[in-house]
Length: 233
Image 1: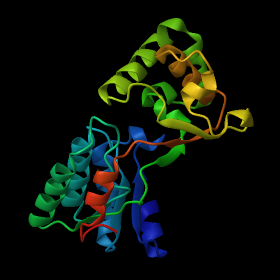
Image 2: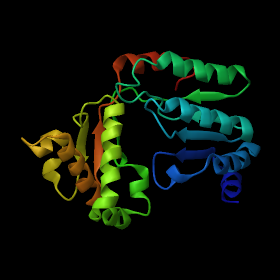
Image 3: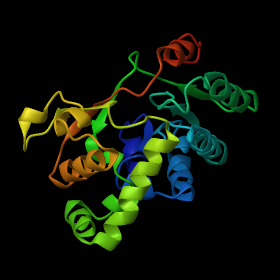
């Protein structure tokens, strides 16, 4: 009903941010139902997809499925390959999008023209750990048995992405301690830079409230390859 009302009032379509709470918990079937309503009005489905790392292909499959089953035009928001493990796979991404278009779907993509992204530092923390808001997150951290799998998952994410550590992440704005602004996570720690200490710092900042970051996660070659595609805005 809300999508229908919004489209009647002049909205261009439906957008999703599937790496952000609470959108991250949305089922694909729910997105199809909502997008179908926007599609009936000639609208567009635009998605900041669930993944931009090596998991981007699953995220693309979801967007393509939504476009097909909802009968709607779709657009990939901020097309990128994030993290060294995903770098160099631009042709695979473009081939998947080209195949979707060849099947009759109207799918485009947009990107920004720099190799860093900017969002909340909290996105470095597993989604399940942040469910229910900041207070629920703090309670999980206070319980060693619940905190341990959170730390383990963050370590796996760094290892699977072949990042090495958190040097790529810069604190952009942390109101509780502005002295940290402009520093990478390891720099914030000074001489103590173990991976466990870096993870602990990210958890502490995330539990302390809003903090934005800049993440140097993309490769210039990938950026340029996406940029020259005629379907890219």
